[in-house]
Image (cartoon, one colour):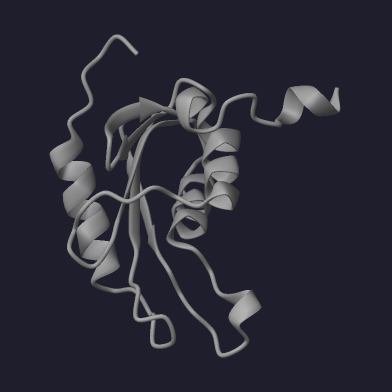
Length: 130
């Protein structure tokens, strides 16, 4: 990507949402924030449930915010833990981010700024269904 991502506002929004997470079972609050291609910041937090399998990931909430607020494509994403540090999304969430950002989407990781193509190489996507 040609433009430089301003990670600070995205990380601040992710921290804000992490502080709103509902994580009474794992005690592992997560916040996620993404930059849409039109400049919007979209975000989400994890929401756990007593039926563990129906918990909602922060990344899923972020994607719901993206779609519900007008759609578009993700340009950059950051997920944070309770300390506000960037964490790597799980494989399922990488797939969800990839669907809405593609290989070019940037992800702030514990190892720095990487592309989705780097963190989820050879991702399965809509083109595989054609």
